[in-house]
Length: 434
Image (tube, rainbow, N blue to C red):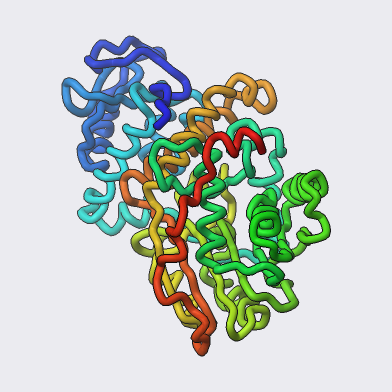
């Protein structure tokens, strides 16, 4: 597995937290010292130091990690709304992390998970994130534009070179490359769908078109793929022409709610996070009217252990309008649609490994990102990738692949043998020739 740099914006390790020098004029007050201790305690006493600008520390005398708060206003921002302020302050350079960012966040997530159970009701209300459970069509277009239309060049710098996949890869062997693992994911999905030459496939939310083109090229199907990101669709269409697949793959700029036609297989990879539970009946209706009575479908989505909102800072700065379902909420989609769930696979640790690769590649081009955007943007995305990886390692986030079919269909797999008849990942030599 790739080794990540200690953190995206390196600073010297601080094994003895109380040696920190002043980063802001003036000493902190006794009240501010007490508030810092309270913040550390409410976070579950994680094994890290919280440091103030005058060198005062809360936490163990020696720790692997430290969070250095560089000005007085930053402290009060953290106390008022820690989930959103941590990201804002880190991006602005007003809060400095010492030690590996992902490893530190794993500790915070695990300790917070236990600590919040004992918070008083008023504090839970003050610090809770607000859930957005679905967007209308106009809001959906705006949200997608803010996240995916940052520019194809931005994503191309750190995603895989094989298929530009911005979703969890499948590391059937832990030492394969990111490119191999992403192609293995595509093949794994195709096997779950039991694709046959000549079939019709509908894909809801196609990203840069990697799965649609793979299905057409390697499984001989015809694909209609829907997306509302113009940047992604432009890339996907160019690649389809270049690969000689334009007659077998149609990329359509439209919302999933407007999908029509009929298909043998319905697939959605990484789109459900944009749908929200309030719109699950609409998606179930789309599946119900398009999927043939003997068809099969697959939804691949980030999930969580119990219902809850997306982190407020991620929702504000990175992933507007997003909602990550619990497994119970996800099952409601199939119940409402009269669909039978055939198989559920959790690829949580595969996503952690995917994100480790993305982090390594992102940090390698950090200076270019700074030049193309700005330092705040570069820091924000470094934190987003590190925090996402930490959430999968800590178990806060899951990755579900759900295979389903119309309830009355008996054209369903009798076993999982068809998934493992041969390796899903191509060998390195085959990838080099492609």
